[in-house]
Amino acid sequence: MNINIPKLQHTASGNFFLMAGPCAIEGEDMAMGIAEELVRISDRLQIPLIFKGSYRKANRSRKDSFTGIGDEKALKILAKVSETFGVPTVTDIHEAHEAAMAAEYVDVLQIPAFLCRQTDLLIAAAQTGKVVNIKKGQFLSGESMKFAVEKVKESGNDNVILTDRGNSFGYSDLVVDYRNITIMRENQVPVVMDVTHSLQQPNQSSGVTGGRPALIETIAKAAIAVGADGLFIETHPEPLTARSDGANMLPLAQLEGLMRRLIRIREAIRFEA
Image 1 (tube, rainbow, N blue to C red):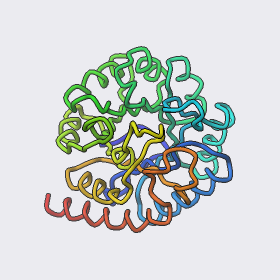
Image 2 (image 1 turned 180 degrees about the vertical axis):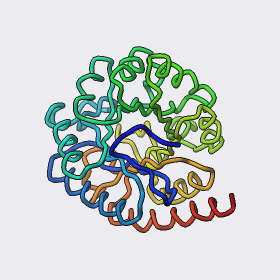
Image 3 (image 1 turned 90 degrees about the horizontal axis):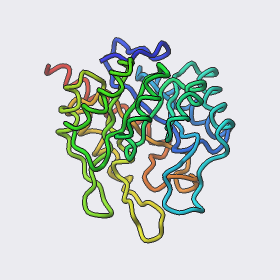
């Protein structure tokens, strides 16, 4: 399934596409360094890339948690990544008035999982004409996401991506129901597996979300095996020093090896088909 982004071309390899980058934009040097490595990997392996990074983190458990370096400063860094490396970029928006602002800098507007039912937010994102990536709420079924897709399309924008990021399992864990990938593809839009957020362990007593990064490869392999069009992976050179979501990020040095193994799964599925 194609995405209408001029800078994102699906290759003859038939690979999945990759949405990857740090959780939050912590600074220009960090973002540019990660982007350079991601572009090197994606070019070598022919994996279409969308660079991701949040310009602001609005959903934090604790007031003293890192939220960002400033909206305009972070958005300008995302724009510089795109201009320098020729790749599209994606960032979250949280309120309707942010859509037009963020759309000046990035190619894809992302709707956070907790906000996927917010009608005004979806309509505002749609009206920018940008691609809209809607994350499925942890509290929703794959079937119910058709209504989010309809809100965007009925607002005049057919460029929609749906992303699964697991379902709540008790109070402090998530579980992935891979049926949702197949079910959400029935909306005739690309479906992505958010590998790293699916391994979060929210609602910890410390107020800092935990994670199980050792299972990143497990979640990613299963997603490709059941037909995900793309993967969403947060990555950082040193996750333990990341200022946001370090507990479930993939070390950047491990990304290329993982991608190579996933490509073999994708090739096997295509051969069988």
